[in-house]
Length: 376
Picture 1 (cartoon, rainbow, N blue to C red):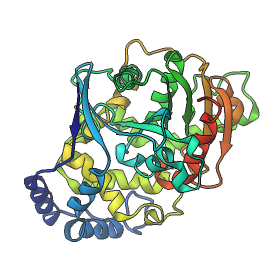
Picture 2: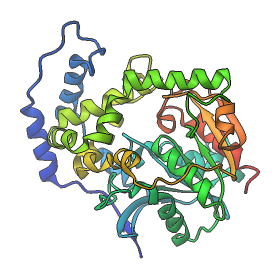
Picture 3: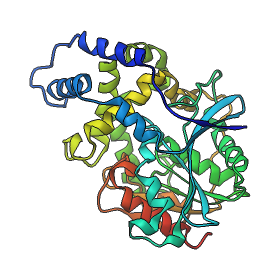
Picture 4: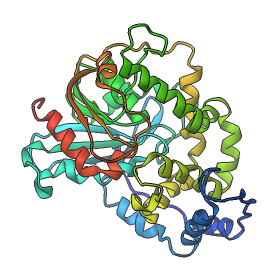
């Protein structure tokens, strides 16, 4: 059964949040300030002051509720999803999967560009029926009650699409959503006509003698990134509950944990608000806060490290489109991707970072439309 859904955060939750923000205890700031020790204290104080005084959650909530939202039960999980049909008949269905620290909200700018391209300078024939599920444990989907749910998400999405009447569809995702999308291409080729991703997974390592120079340089770059930026990942894989106690109880801690990633992983040149507005940042943070899902959002990280029988990585046979954004966490060479992905379209974007659907929705939408133009 599918039921309509709309967001309404209780007034008591908002009042409690405001009281917590009023009582914030600010830590000692490292000498020199800046961002090299983590989130800049001066910036975070400005953001929290805006959150406390000026941010209008009800206004943002109403905007989110302009999207057609639903819930349905799949494998014991209540899955929240957005479903927006194209302005034309017989459009290709497309499922979009978010990553971390994102929510379904990250796809909100992309949806109209895909459902109604004719209104945004594109060809109406490129329109999609768009489905944006919230991953289990994220946003308004229920939290996993058992480990290793992450590996089951691609099959859950296939069931969701079938329940909506879509037995043949495309898929797009980035970050964790890029992994879900890749798995859809690997194991659900009977339903998936093609996939589009902004990040590349693979099983080859730095010690493989068949690596090209470009592949070796890429893997070394990834190792350097893990040293400099990967502490969050290691912690969320190994001690997620300890971290969750602080972030679930402190809106300041939650905002700091997330906004640091927005600044470090986006193409913002060091100014996070050059790419994201304060309302956008805080709306995404509010979804985590109101639903208390920061702890459950760590599940894919724990699962990736502790799954006793991991799903094997196998070549993807369905057509693949890959868009590489210059400020993303990694910029793999095409030959690395070709080891696993059946590449039909490879695009190296002129700008943009990890949060492509938010940062450069027009570039991303056009690339998605171009891939699927011949797959309908």
